Image (cartoon, rainbow, N blue to C red; front, side, top):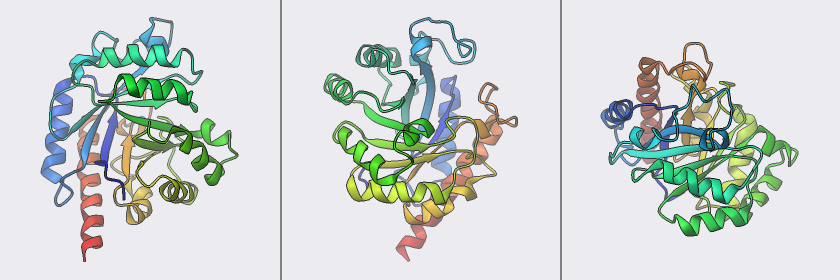
Length: 265
């Protein structure tokens, strides 16, 4: 099992008070699962970083506001989700994005399609204090014909640079994850890269955590992330319903606590 602390993630925080409240909810509901963190996810893209036209400019926080969203809390992993599916000027833009995160930044999630490994290793040398999460989405999986062996082999090219890999075919669109599809990838990655933290996403919210139960049963240290299903509409362009987010944290924490208790019996 991974030695990294697993997390329950929410993407699209816009205010530090939201993060503090959700961290308290996690702490109150953690049970025996005391190491699990709250991933406080804030979105940025290459276009919002560089003031280029994009439909997300009025939805995601500006680069000047990002550092103020992150809160200092022992159960929080402040994470900047940097999206660039074209892989342009990767090293330069990652360094600039990390600066926008300020002193509270703990991690960067790369919403990218197999970024240049050399650029990523150089970035890790420059910012060794940051954890790195690589999103492996639908396009990244399709490049290797959705073959778990080939995908795991590709991930070995990043060995030493990554802390977590996030398998996410939905990529914020609220599409439900498939256990049958994801489990072979998780097993192959854990075999080849046992120190790499495993994470999954795809249509997770307060009413859909049953989708991930078989994965949690086999990998109780897995991390999860939610975005679209934290809105009644399921549309990531709408504001998060923090009542739904609270239920998601409460029920996810209970799910992981029960899995840990079953392992100890």
